[in-house]
Length: 239
Ligand SMILES: [Zn+2]
Ligand SMILES: [Zn+2]
Image (cartoon, rainbow, N blue to C red; front, top):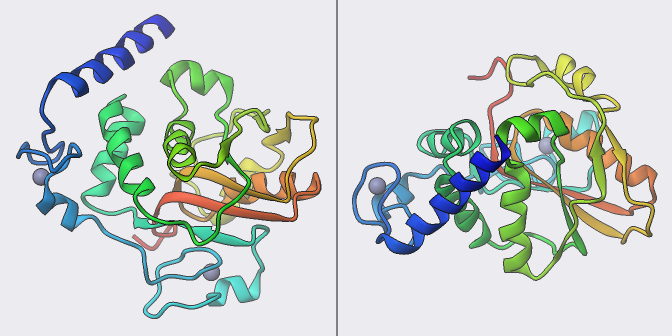
């Protein structure tokens, strides 16, 4: 299985080098990326949102009502896209169909944007080793790799460990999501942590997973924890 995944990855890499870019969504010639200019225009951006939790809003705000009522454990969120058509198609292919070209394209689109603040380390949300074996790659880590390289920030994937294989969050409501990921992560690194870390995930919905990671890092003494995700999904029941 692992060998097969490796071959698939090498194959995807090679085909990307040899073929001219082609839009993954409509098949038109790509505009440097594997995406054409028109499809790129269609990507739903999340520029008007809460600075604290990235919830899409009518007007930008430092904090939304939910953040005022219940302060998130992290300090700031950076989530440049919304999880809607056609980005959701690319993400689903990346995450569930092993289409790494889609992941690379998403990572590039993300890395071309500027984060509100530069952390000292970028830490991807870890997968449980069983899930990692099944999928062959950690979708958050592959995105984080590109971000770290582009922003010249250290990537550390040895900071957190997922100690519990949690149920997929997709079908759960906000309370169940929180419960599902509680104590799912622990600190793996014993070395000194820097003052400012950004935790990276692919999709953020209620933020329960990122919140648990932030909790572990804050407890370990990290002063500022930002959460970064590619796309903000509507809250359960909001669809
Ligand atoms: Zn296209
Ligand atoms: Zn908010």
